[in-house]
Image (cartoon, rainbow, N blue to C red; front, side, top):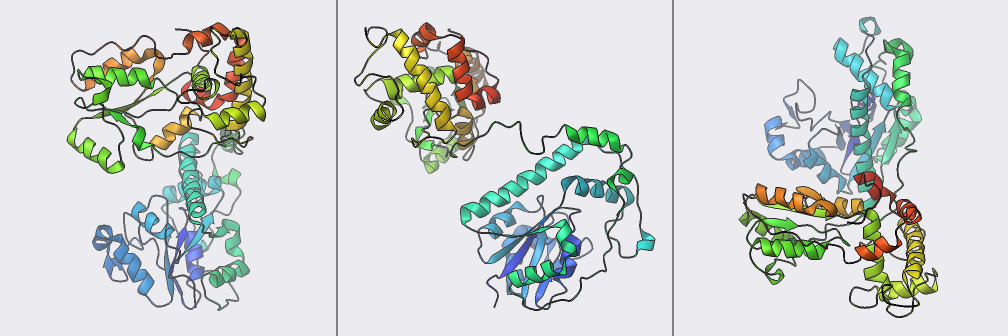
Length: 479
């Protein structure tokens, strides 16, 4: 008896999915029902229904067709491409009784095959004497869009399977000619019959070399050379994924503005501005949101605007160091502070100290300690320490990506130009005047200015390279 109620073949156009379907259907007890959730037809282009469910019924309730697939005799399934009904993907991926088969092909080959099929109108071939072929022009920009969509879908499948503790049966285009692989796939689906030969009804189209399929093959080679196939130029990211942190959101009581903070940013200045915008105090601001409360606030504030504020990576790293590590009052991470002193040898005093006034821990000592902190930060963000990557110094890019899990901010402001960006927000809400933002938005800016030099900047760039690259920050400048 099969451990699965049904199966899904995750594939794309021109990856050999028709051939795979034909061979699945060669096994007694297995049946693949075409592209059951293609948004433009149901099952096959000329079909009116799948298992009695029409396209209109399917679009209204996709789960009704899935239940029909599960209830039919044997083990049944369908092919699913990245542009098919996304509701079905959520249903299938969370269902452990759904077998996942992932079919892949070299994306350049599938792209060229797709372009030839579109040019000739021949999507299947059963008689080689009827074969049509045509050289195509390779459009690199179009291919990059195609490749990005394929890769994004594959990553989504992989990450979802990982999070749910599931696995899939992977089949490459080249595996489709191996009868033993097809027999193995059948066994994976719970069918222990065997076939001795593959279904050869469908014939391979365009078997000639790539150089004969593409009109200007050398130009295609040159275009593809621009692609970083192994992603060598990416900035590595070993930071843990983040959630949206909805309880930290702050809303103006009247004006319909929602602040989605990025930790170690200019929160005090933003809270002050939001409160004075509505003629009140910071005690009047709305805080401690839950998802339900936030949705209710949005419904009652039609035309609302949400925003975040990012800080220069060097200033932010310095703020996190001064506020959470150096000082020992409210906001200090005391256990992390002790670990940084004892394990990572950060040269900071045992007790609280301010470099502006302390004779031992002076500005020279502060510069030395901050450089040591930046060295630790680089290792911490690269998952090379046992200390957690706290949101206070996690990259702003990662934190913003976490915010997007619930909803993106309408605008991302920068600390050094808040006045102009605040004016844009106020005008979008129809306000004709607004309060002036606080002049001092970073309480440690003067301290940083006193120790800043090219070595401090270089250390910050090494530690916080993701934010420098993502947001285009230049060298830090005192305000």
